[in-house]
Image (cartoon, rainbow, N blue to C red; front, side, top):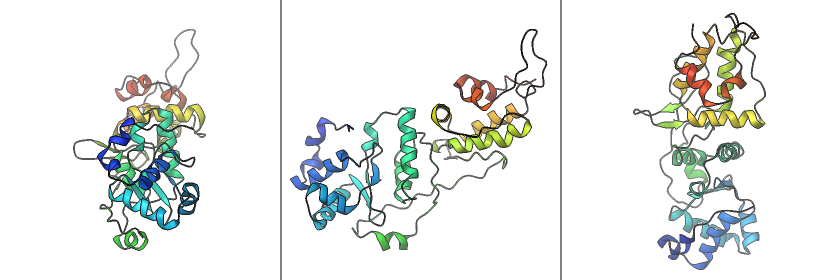
Length: 276
């Protein structure tokens, strides 16, 4: 397993100002065998200390120094560390974004996930953060490093204009993407709007199908966009297989796999090209 480290690491003013032990600690957090390309992962103090050959006190001091410089975030209660800019140096491929979403799902709803999503809000990471706010009392009660936390980030979903669609995504006032619709929500939206009209349900979400769904969401993360696509399909006689087939052609109707195969199908559905 390899991790990308820029050669400018050693000339960065923040890094140059650290003592050798803290520099080594930061490199360890980037390169250790338990790290993740997202930069956010489970890193027990006892494991850090054992693998670096330092005491628990030295481990805590290193984390405190790195957090003070905003190079990392550390959540003591769950022993989760976030190397803040690590994901910035990774690929933006569909597989990487899927791996990041999977990693976030393994972090036991750690409050750092909220900050992570805010940091990388322009990436279409297919993950829904389940906690809206974190109380100050809870934060102070577990932050043993006593480093002031930034204000908690709220990712409240905007009201769903179509409750049947089950597609939820936040945008700010100018339409900037905040939180993408997840693969599971897209499948649920298909089943609620399209399968309810007689089209085949989509059930399993794995392998190549998951990759295709993530690719489509990366291209169009908005709630409103997918809501219109699914509604247009659900009201299209052609997509529902209700129009007579052309001579020599078999009867056809839309499917979820047809929709996600490429971007063209969804765009055409959005534009209403499959109408009467």
